[in-house]
Image 1: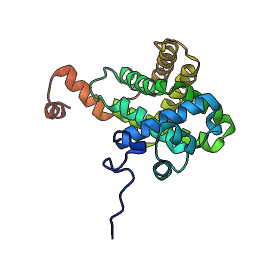
Image 2: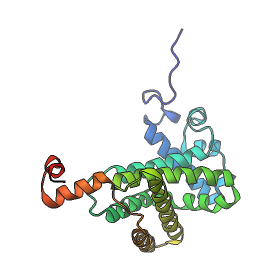
Image 3: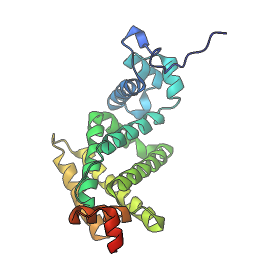
Length: 229
């Protein structure tokens, strides 16, 4: 019996005889078409079939990978997270690192600006979608918090991640209205929200972050710091 091929095998996925696409390129092509249609027509006024045909992708492959539209938004969130987390270097202070990570997420959102704004406009009328994206956003904030070295342990950590999600939400509302090329209003809103979070004790460093900061400040290796403590 002939072996059935995975429709997302990079050797087989050649929509409309165009050059071969890998999964990331497939996802981005579909995202661009879907969010372009959303920006023009509204989030609820187009189908995945419309987006597939607009992108020149095989409808059956889109159906297999994205059976429902909200999965596209989850993919966009993962793309934003991947962009933010790609450079895991020293981001300065915890607050500075969080600022940098969040602005990297906005850089990805900016590429799909009108479509994302259309989704934001649809959320008040679609509670299930709002709940889905709220949970996904909180998960993203936990990843960013962990990467920056914020203490996410226990009930206190849950509170801090919730507070960081509120910081993101405040900055997102500013981004939605920000028409400047340098996203100055977004940066100002994020900066102010992080300042308030810092004053409230939200930006508490994890034990690992404290150890790393101490090592950078003293130049001592980890084991010497542990002996001294």
